[in-house]
Each structure stands twice: as C-alpha cells, then as structure tokens.
Length: 521
Image (cartoon, rainbow, N blue to C red; front, side, top):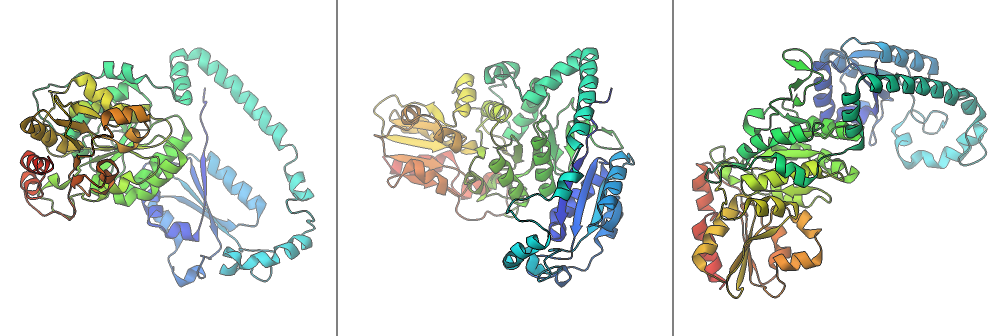
C-alpha cells in the first residue's frame, strides 16, 4: 500500500526569486529529482520599491528550466488553467520539480494602483473599500457567494478521500507492525530518555586526547541508532565536520544515493541547507542536523533565526570553532561567531570541552523538542578531562554549567570556561591552590534556565571574584563575572600560523590563565 504520496507546494513572488537562496534550493531540488515539489510563482513584475524591471532582467522560467525543472507559464487569473496545471504537476513523476509561472496583475480590481508597485504597500489601502463595493462585498470579512459556491461539496469529497486513506493506512499497519510502531514513534516525536541515551553511548578512552569534532564522529552513530529519525548532512564538508552516519546511507538520486538515505550532501549551499533542515523539521517526523565550518554559519543565520522563532528541533554541527583553526588564517578563524549565536533567543549554543561533554551536547540536541541546538566543536585535539567523573561531565552539560573542580578551602576565585579553554582553567586551578573553583559552562542559555538554587550553588553570589576564559569575543561572559570580574577572550581577528602558536599569541594557554587568575587573588 502507498500511504505517503503528498506534494509540497510553495508560493513566491519576484522578490523571493531575487534572493540567492532561490538558486541554492532550486539547484538541490533538481539535482536530487524532487518531483513532488511545486512552486507557484506569482509573477506580477513588481517589487516593493520599483517595478521589477528596475532591478532584474533575467528570464526566470529559462533559469529554472536550465536547473532541470518542469516549467509552465499561464494566466494566473485563470482558475481552470491553474487547476489543470496543478493536477498535471501532482501526477507527473518525471524526476523534475515543478515551477508554475502565474502571470498576474497586482491589485487587480483597484484601478488606481493595479499593475503598479504602489499596490505592494500601503498606497492601495485608501481604495480597498470602493473596490469591495464594486465586487458587491458589504461586510469587512465577507466571503462572496461565488466563492462559497466554488467550495461547495469540497468537504464531503475530501472526507471520502481521507476515509479511504484511513482504510489503506489501517491495512498497512496490520501488514507492517514493526514499521507502524516506528512511524508512530516518529509522528509523536518520541526519543529515549537522556539516561537511556547515555547508557547506549560507550565511554571514551580517558587517556586519549582527541578533537571534539572527532568525538562527534563517534557519538553521532549511536545517537542515530537510538533516535532513528535523526538525520545528518553537510555543506560539502563531511570529511572535515566528521558527522557522517555510517549506517545511514546517502539521500538523493543517482550514484550511491536513495531517498531512504540519512546523510544529505547539500553541496556548498549553507543557506539552502538551513532552509531544507527547517522544512524537514516542520514536516514533523524527522530531526535534521546539518554541518559546516563555524565561520560559515553566517551564510545561514536567517534560517537559524526561523528555527529558533518557530521552536523546531534542528541541530547545527559547527566545527573548526576558534583561532585554533590555525593556518587557514583570519578568514576561517571564528572570533565573534560563538558570541553572535548566543544572542539568538531560543538557540542553545553548546561548546563542549572534551569527548564526554560532547556526548552530553549531542544527547541534549537529540532530546530537545522546543528549538534548535548549535554544537560548537574543535578542529584541534583537547585534553580529555579524566579528573572529572564521566557522569559529572555528561550530566553537567544537560544543565548548561556545572562545577568541574570544587575548591578545597575558602572560596577566593571562580574560573569559568567553555570548550577548549576548560583544560587550561583546570590546569591553572591545580597550580593556584585550594581556594579556586572551576566551572564548565558549555551552554549559557541552558544554565540560565536552571532554578536559582542550582545557579547559586554553581556560582555562589558571595564570591564576586570571577574570571572567564574563552577563545572568542568575551562580552556574553560579563553577566557572570560582573563588574568586579575579568574576561580573558579574543577581541580581534587572528592570523595565519599553526593553531597552537595562534592560541599562545592570544593568551589561550594554561600559563596565561594562571597569570591572570593570580592577579585577581
């Protein structure tokens, strides 16, 4: 039985197709043969400021045909032509996405602004009442009798179609009990508990020092097994991001790809990647993730904002997280990027310090149902913090921040750090003595959601002598260190050299952490 045969329909205008993402998305859809995608292009030759001809002269239909789309141009006011074309699009399984170019007159019926960009904004408002009167509409929200007549019988007809589908679905469930159970899990958005996931992810070798992106390459596989609706993908950087689901297969058409694949090859299309992830998440059954270098996340910020605003569970795997990138130089060394992501409402930005914290970060992203998560991972190796119990590291990440090293005497100083700098804070604290506490802060937004009692236990209000260290712009840390505290960060762009040299030049070392901490005691 066929239980899923729907199409996706999007509506756009001239301005929408001027955006660069229209190219990225259209190329991906055609290349992967997504013939159940239909775009209705309201082609009225208008943008807000001017008529469209003022800023564009390309042949949009030809552009989409060149991509490999099926393109049909009609009179957009001809309802019969619209229905005929849409019916044809829905039934055509030709490996081509569809573009319906509907030539229309904007503001039709309001003679004063019809066919001009004035109808795009407020200029036509003054004429709306007269236009409605000409159409015989007397009430502000009146629906004309012609419209009501057009939709007569639709509910009955569609109900019959739906009931027939329910019968098919029931028969399918009876014949495919295991798949039906999995589908029910997907639809309900069910995932194992964090405790169950931790049990299913083996502990790392506590004597091995590896990059958190490398740890991520290990963690993502049991996560995908535990949460089978978890998908992955990369903007042409699987080899560097290390986020490939080994048993997932590749999504798409041709080569070794199928439409059951869990690994998406987005090409160098970060903006489209983010938008496609949002579309998959909005659909409701799958939990998409996508990866690129952290510095390239700026290409997809608009899509991250949508995900945060819409409260959908997307995951961004962002590697090469700091000046530690090294020889690629300042163009590829994120300095401001982590801080710029932290200002998004409802985006959990997680920068784990070692492999076990990376486990916690992945589990959090797989657990979250009310918004997106960004996983910020290193290119360079970091020290596995075996002096902190595995359970403490994993579970501490789920609270956003935790005590990594507790003072053994009177508390004189709190050192906070995230990501690759936590190792330096731990090393410095050992040298200073018994009055220093180290706090790991992998995710500020999650920590800020904890109750006041827990936050005060981690950051005692009585101790105002606080220092934070992170290889990036330090402004977000001041809400924790206060006016009496200090932030050791990176406030300018980096330079091209081996990563350890760049880190040392900018003071991201245990020695400098020790120096700055001693100066505060």
